[in-house]
Amino acid sequence: MPVALAPITPELFADFRGGKESALEQLFRSNFDALTKEAVGTLEDVAAAQKVVASAFLELWDRRAKPQSAAQLEDLLRQIVGSGIAHEQRRRATVHRMAEGQAATAPHHHDPEPTDKVWALVVAELHAEKTDPKVRAQRLAERSRHGAATHMAHVAKPSSSRFVLVAVVVVLAVLVAVPLWYLNRGAAATKAEQALNRNDARPMLSAAGQRGKVTLEDSTTVFMGANSVVKLTSHFPQDFRALQVTGTASFNAPVGTTPLLVQVGKAWVTAAGTEFVVRHFDDDPTAMIKVIKGSASVMGTGLERTLGDGATAQVDSAGMISDLPADRASEAFSWVDGNFVIQNQPLKDVLVALKRWYKLDITAKDTSIVHRNITMTASLESSKAAITALEQSGGVTIGYEGQKLVVKDTVPGAAKKSAAAKKKAKK
Image (cartoon, rainbow, N blue to C red):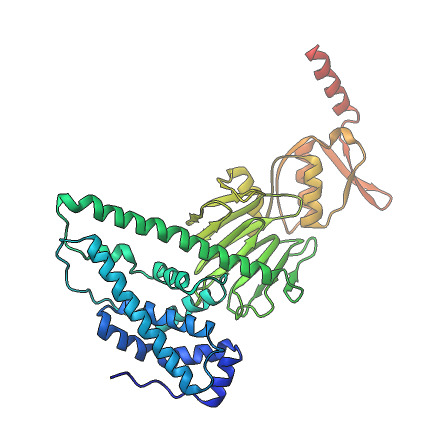
């Protein structure tokens, strides 16, 4: 006998037909457990039953314009769930035929996933790239902790004559799962990027010489570096739990119903329960990422890389992920600890950085010194300390000429003489 479903009020039916996602959530939460219990009665596997029911709600959403009454909506939901159960039975029969001749064990009974977690997967699919309902169902299956490979593991150990066939089935399941999962993540990032680039996105800005912390609606703490922009989607975190960084910022991202997505340059960082920092200024095409505590996934145009405590990575303008040299990491992320660090960089670039972090506008009138390499460390709390460190490292002096700060060679002409001497030595 079919289970009883929660009554569908005229208001709920109208909202559902009108495309209100809140109506889908209400319908899902009030009926998911009952429909799953009904599916378990046939499939004897709670993980498979939850996947079938979750997929049914996605298909119901796609077909929401079809029912003309609450009764028709309920009938359509039952019909889709029934079709999903039948499809799952056929899939199992196919798997067992591929392992023909092997004795299968009794179905395993797994603990159900929390309803909140399943709903989060449904929401992720709603906002992913629109695709065929069958592909959606497959993606939900791959994201579940009990996919085709797990099911094959419950088949009794094959004899040597069947071992190769079973191994091929397992390998194919894995090869299918990885790209589908990756494409789903990529589709979610694409949708989030579109939302972040709309005119209604909300920017937070820090000026030159300014740093500051802010706590977002989802309790994520953002510490913005100088001269940076952190952009949120218009209804963060309800529409997307996603941000875009131009400049540098650190995040302490608590666990939520969905992971935090941060776009920086050509990279996407996915994190939950993680403290991390990112950097990508317009004058530097490379995105840099460091995990301070926890773990995060970094995705470029290639495969993803997972970073643990203290790990770093960089993503170039083509979206390729590589290791981040220690000296560049020190420069990029020392601001989080209140320090300004330069590692063997030309003076011209150091002057740009001083303007960003200290709001010091220093001009080098003597162009012969702008390529002199500088290595220095100073507190971000003291522009005087930064000037002193630069003078000591670069063999230069900094002072006012009228209203302008100017950097000069400590020994006028020394740089030119040194260059001439090197040129003469080469001859």
